[in-house]
Length: 135
Length: 157
Image (cartoon, rainbow over all chains, first blue to last red):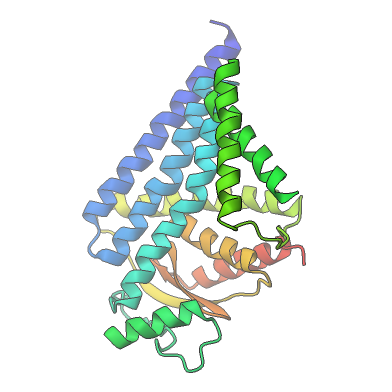
């Protein structure tokens, strides 16, 4: 095995193992943290560090092949959809009335009231009114 | 014009994902791309809105590199909280000013906040985002203001 190949192999395993470590930390945190809002944050460790490091490690494993191109496409896709999904979950919780527990001495910012008169935003305001009506 | 563009993009995607370049497989790819374009056209989904990417060609990739660094730092911070014997969490919901002019810029800012572990964009309002932090410190807002400034700087308006 040439030196360059050896370096590639070692580097790729370092990335894969550390990615797996962060994925595990995320899972552990999701189990360990006390409530819904804090658990969301643990999940995003798996989403970002775990995902990026694992994909980078696998790219090095496969070298300059079509597999690497596919991995990068998957990475870009997850980079955009991951936070979007997290936001959807968090927003659903807020809209349905679950408020985060504030740390001592801190006062939460209030979201704008759910019923907005003359909603200029069209669809978004419509859903909000509906939700408020149901509550 | 737009329909030809969609066809080319679909065929290139097929070539990238398939990896088998025999005449039959490539032919099937061209045929399915053609079929997809035909269906989209029949459904009248082709509009003539210009596709705008109002981002600086050099500034935005630089921002992405900066963001990767922030993600690394934030991941390490949250990992330390999770593994600490007494998890030092300090939850807080607060508002952050938004200065981006385009929708795309605001989406990038909101997603950047959520991508860095420890902060999540919970609600978007016209002038501000509501952000939830798991370990709030007085410096948290400053960091997000800096991120907001950098996203706005990467916008090409």
